[in-house]
Image 1: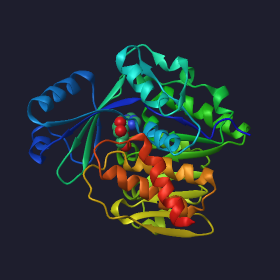
Image 2: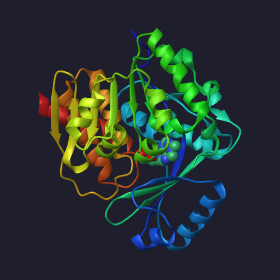
Image 3: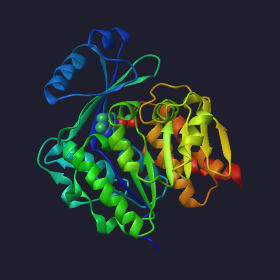
Length: 334
Ligand code: 26A
């Protein structure tokens, strides 16, 4: 039996969350709903403006694939996170956030440089705008990945966000090679419309001949395929990928394979912050698959967990909440 259910590779980023006004975004030349990459000095200036004028909601470990892995582990899965953090307090805070949920990390994850930081700005319409300084995670490479641990996993999960970094892409390509040799299933998330727009070649390289499970949202699916409708986009994505899962925000999700297309409705919640909803969705979906749920049930669990993420601040739920929600669903199924 595999000792690990999931080996994920992704950026290590600490989120600083603020509730901001629309005017603030305009003043700072930030485009709502986007993720923008920046340098350390520019981010420090923005942080100082934020602290002076906007409402600080706190610090949380983020990083898209890490949020996914946390949901997966908190639901009961055995997981490993391959990442790169800086030495010192921030890096330790970041790894502790993973290890506390039982996620294993490699010693070689701690490197020179500073841990990545993301300013997550939440406007009153619950939309999130991100301003990311990658720091040392930009240099994530084959050296930080424990490929021996990977051989013990059933699934490899890769975030599309890695597509901008040459060294991270090399790490991903090697991981895919190992996955192929060991019959490990592969899941990839397209991560962000900005990646589809600006790092398409890198994404295509990471997707290679297709994957077992592809996660994306509506906008990413349309942009990536160049199609006008979700139906056409799905057909195109299924040419190379076995299962495609498209999140549709409040409308729910669509799961498609060559054999079937399943729409699962969203749940009505009092939304306050959409940050990390897609990440939690992927983690819960993967966990449900591992647990033997069918695709529809997997989407239902994923929607249940991600709708709770939307109803609170920050990309992760308190740890005991994931398993409680799973129990509720299992009781409904019984
Ligand atoms: C390469 N970039 C820009 C990123 C990210 C990122 N995760 C990986 N790579 N920029 C922001 N995030 C994370 O996305 C989560 C929400 O989906 C943030 O840390 C946030 O927790």
